[in-house]
Length: 454
Image (cartoon, rainbow, N blue to C red; front, side, top):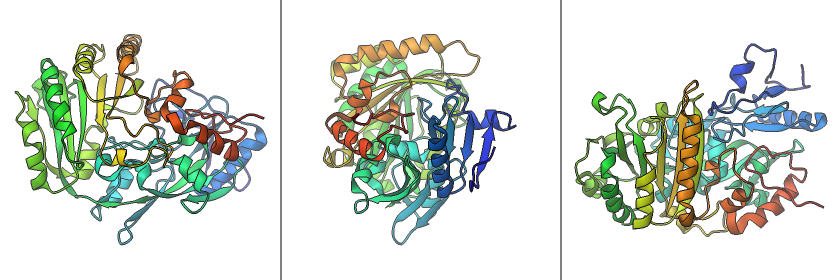
């Protein structure tokens, strides 16, 4: 097939690359689009969108293809695919980066760190820039430098009609507000402009592991440690088995452990002082905190969440870790069947909470933690039903503690009201922007905000 003036690649079902092109990060998602329009430039995105409207095709947008809900691919429609658009251009003097919509966070980290700069990105380097950014963007640097959307300066957007707009505080400011947390509901972002912040290139970072039996002790200590931590310290708590990474001794592989991952966005000598109490806690099995390149830290756990494995997530924001909440977590976190399943707790606060609630579309900046319960199993393994049930049971046990949800952590089977839960008080304003820029809900293959009807 052909689309007039389209300069990228059109991949249809009879193409040798079709199966590879329709595959996304979550291998549990198996969909068959009519055509994959792999764009090479912003104009291709606009042309593909106009074609989709003319042909009345279902539309999915693929950036990194990393969303757990599988929103990057659809059945019997068109995938507007930006994976060939991965360019990153850094302005070290101005402290900014221009990033194409198909870039991955590893692309941004490498380009920015060449100049000792960074912006808040995902904790896995093969995460897509677009999906993570449009949902808000939590990562190691958020407590010091804010969410990814707090560092977004402008975006080039292709609308549902195939028009190309620039959106910033001064140009289409209503759209710019909505893009900062409202997901892929309003258009296709063909390029982003981010503020960069000085960092590294060497930081003090890494994980500490304790036996799963020490979970209560670790969490009770972590509650006070995290609440008093400076904003430079980013931490993520992980519950699961120790993965078979080269840095982890073989005798610890697959042993149930609680891990506290750390990254300090400040001087190494200062970081050593801040982290000393955590490193002295109890009887750690392994302490891998050390000076390391930020780009290496960002990719250290990439192999634990490989493309093509099967993923099922449940998630919520949580308050501070009270005794009752710690007990629920300790009782459920290690009950999964698959050795690859895990639980993550992200510590929020700091710069995240200093932005006013309605200044961007990101919901619930007052939350203390975000937790995600992640069932993971490889193709052919029979853990799926059991670990989906585990995640749902664990989620139900957290019901009395729930405080909203991070939209990027919503899975494919969530009820529509959970999207409203993700946005809280800003949801109605998002509906107004959606109604203006996408009244026909062309962009609905996402965590959907429906336009106002009539």
